[in-house]
Structures are given as structure tokens and as C-alpha cells.
Image (tube, rainbow, N blue to C red; front, side, top):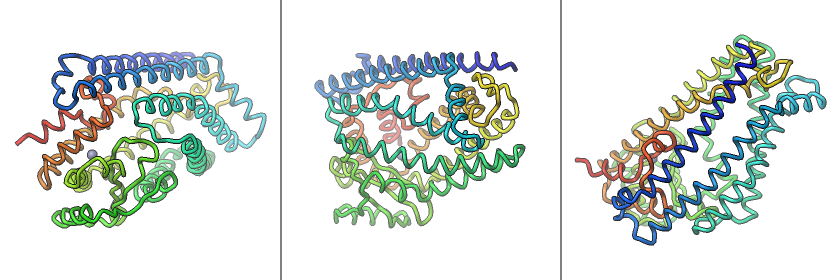
Length: 412
Ligand SMILES: [Zn+2]
């Protein structure tokens, strides 16, 4: 395949992806406004709240559209003006070591992307979320969050990339397999200890204090033969009023984190029902299965990458004459985008099925009514679109829409 053809493919995928995503966003927004649809959800939203929820989804649609259009244009300009080659040349003027060239290239690219994205995050948080009363993030928190994320990604990406580049330099043929083992080991480590390592950098985790909640949680866990030593409250209210809860880890490291906003908004029995749902994910081995699946996908990605890296056309497609690891990887990621879209759809379908299973688990072992009222509170409090378009759900939703979850809970 010629570099020209690869370039044309990359551009075609970008355009198709942009049209597809924009079309889906539009359909989803339209579906949310549809009178017939909204009548079906009148039991969840009163008139005022419905108007507010529609205004919120419209504001998010508009800011999302401006953001995605801008990103789309930037990538196209970078491709047609050969800006990746310009950056590559610039870095080669600074250092000669091939590993350092790749590292500095990715560092600068990451920094440029972060800076370009910054105005959009600022608008999203301080204008859109603020207007609808969700935002709690102060300017100081925003600045420290951005800096912390940059430092953490630099450290982790730096360590992993350096190791991968070193492996690639020394054994080109089997590099992909070793790189996979390395990434799998790292993700296992993060899967087990990520919550205890990363979250405290951004948030405060404290053990649950509420005596009544503690007692009910232990009673439920005992009834399920589930030992939960790590039940934390996280100060989610530091950034947003939106409520959430999640499960992480395995074995002794298994942890459930409840946002303080969840504890504030839900009654004790509703919180226990949400916790039962989270434990359902563990009992049904969802967390482990998703971890295994992501490793299989990385394996496929690296296998194809390892095979294609030997072709200089990949780098040449981005106007770079001398083939290099970083330019080839970049071209490959762009070329891989239709497959990434497809794996995203598959992952989301599995995730939505898991959500139904965890709901059913909570229904069977705890209280379906409490879970239902808890879910309604969480969803309507965050002014969610209660009538998402089915195609949008397929591509983007990790969780089924509220109505579908309630229907599943009411099933005999
Ligand atoms: Zn869940």
C-alpha cells in the first residue's frame, strides 16, 4: 500500500468518524426533546425540571459540537500541513538518541493537545456545569487538577514508553509480545492498587462514619458472605454535585467508594441497594471479565502494530521520510480508529449487560424498590437525558437508560 493511499484512508476515517459522531449527538439531542418520548418520562421530571434538563442537554450538545469541530479541524490541518513531520524534525534538532526523540515527541504532542483542550474544559466546567448548578470546582482545584494529571501521565507514560521503546530497539520482531506482557502487568497493578494510589492524589478518601449506614452495610455484606474491609466516602462534592459510586480491585484490595454527594442525596436503604449493585459486579465477576477483555484487545492492537511497524509507508503517510516508532504509532492509531469504534461498541454492550446483571443481583439479594428510587434520584438529579437515542446508547452508553433499568428491576 502506498503512503498516499494510507494518508487518504486516515483522512477518510477522520471525516466519517466526525460525521458519525456529530450525527449521533444530533439524533440523541432530538430524541431527548421529542414530545412523545418526554411524555413517557413525566413521572420522573416535573415541568420545571423537564425544561431545565432539556436546556442542559442542549447546552452540552452545543459546547460538545464546538469542541469536536475544533479538534477535527486541528487534526486535518496537522495532517495536510505535515505538522507531525515538523514536530518530528524539531525534536531531532534537539536530541539524536532515537528513544529520546520518541519520548520528547510524545511529551510535546501531549502538552500541545492538553493546552488546546483547556479552553473547552474551562467552558464546560465553569460555564455549562456552573449555569445548571452542578459545578463545585474552584479555579485553584482546576489548576492543581490539570497540573497533577500532567505530572502523573508524564511519569506513567514515561516509564511505560521508555520500556517499550527499549524493547523495540533491541528485539524488533517479538517486541509486541513483550510490550503486551509489560502493559498487562502494569494494568494488573493499576487494577489492584490504582484506587489507593491515584484517587488520594485528587480526593480525600475516608472510612464511612455514619453508624446506621455502617451497620446496614455490614449486615448486608455478611448475608452475602462478602468481606468488605474498604468502604470509603470520597469528597466528590469538591468538584461537582453529581452523585456516584464505584467498585475496584480484587482479593484483599477490593474497595467500594461512595461519593459524599450520594450519601447526602440518598436514604440509607437506597445507599445499601446501590452498594448491593456494586457487589453484584464483583460476585458476577464483571470486573475481572472487563479486565481480561481489555487485555485481549491490547494484545490484538499490539500484534497488528508489531506487524505493521516494519513498513516504512506508515511513517511516510504522515510525510516523514525516515521511519520511526513514534510516527508509525501515531499513523497506526489514526488508521485503527474504525476498529477502536467497533471495540468501543462491543465493550459498551457488555458493560450494559453487566449493569442489568448487577441490578438483578441487587434485586435478588437486597431491595428492588430502594434501588429503583436510588437510581431515579441519581439520574434525575444530574438532569440526564431520559430518552437517549437507541443508536447513541449503543455507541456511547456504558449504562442502560433509566427506563430500561427500571423495567428490568420490575421483571418477575
Ligand atoms: Zn454498575
